[in-house]
Length: 263
Ligand SMILES: NC(=O)c1ccc[n+]([C@@H]2O[C@H](COP(=O)([O-])OP(=O)(O)OC[C@H]3O[C@@H](n4cnc5c(N)ncnc54)[C@H](OP(=O)(O)O)[C@@H]3O)[C@@H](O)[C@H]2O)c1
Image (cartoon, rainbow, N blue to C red; front, side, top):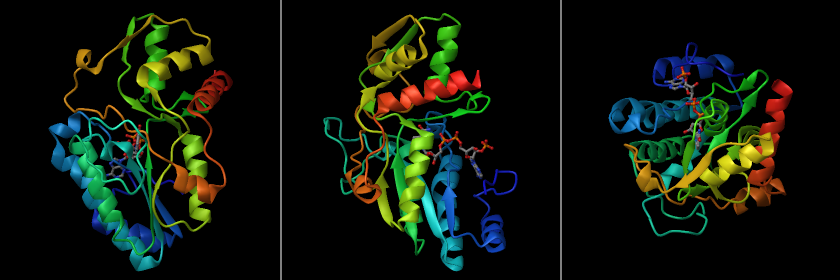
């Protein structure tokens, strides 16, 4: 059962303990987080409270009631190795570049306090709801909005990762949970691209002609540095699930057809 912040504020340990005790769930899937990557640089205590300290509260409550804690983590625990150009395994040493990545890494450590835990690192999430783009906040939604407004789009082509479609990741996450997988797993769509490559594929799938230009990150400075390469190796999850998630291009096509259905 999804619990919004108004019912469960994960930074309140009493609230967490009471809710887990009341519902006696078999698993708690923590999707809540501080995700404002740039704002985190100046609001590190709020970011840390939600992404790290609160995960410890969830871990303790899960342990007390025999529930599995599923903690959603991020490819942004990597990036400090600026020369890396091969997919990261779960066993690779992490190295975040900013406060958000550091807090997500601390969240993984906190999640390990739960006697039963499943930590899922994923990347570049996007989805589409029944009524159209979800909250209009993901990269694809933003690209469509800007393209529809006929604005020229300059998108970086030197940050490479695997953008991932939430329904694909969520289904696989439930598959790992059903298989009683424990520990740390990487879970993304297959393949890799840049944000520019993603925008190009989106416009092709949605049948939109956009004024799109590739630029280097140096021409789009942000308060928080992003990884130049954060592709995650998903072999461990694939072994348990029996198949890899669909290629990222197929995921973009699924998003685009979801948009058409919602229109
Ligand atoms: N988006 C990505 O590209 C991406 C990539 C890799 C990993 N992740 C991870 O995936 C998970 C979901 O990310 P997302 O992009 O869906 O995030 P999102 O759209 O920013 O949603 C985060 C949710 O957490 C809620 N929340 C924040 N603080 C809370 C608190 N103290 N108590 C209860 N709820 C709280 C927010 O509630 P309000 O609506 O009230 O603010 C919001 O509903 C996060 O763990 C994130 O780190 C995301």
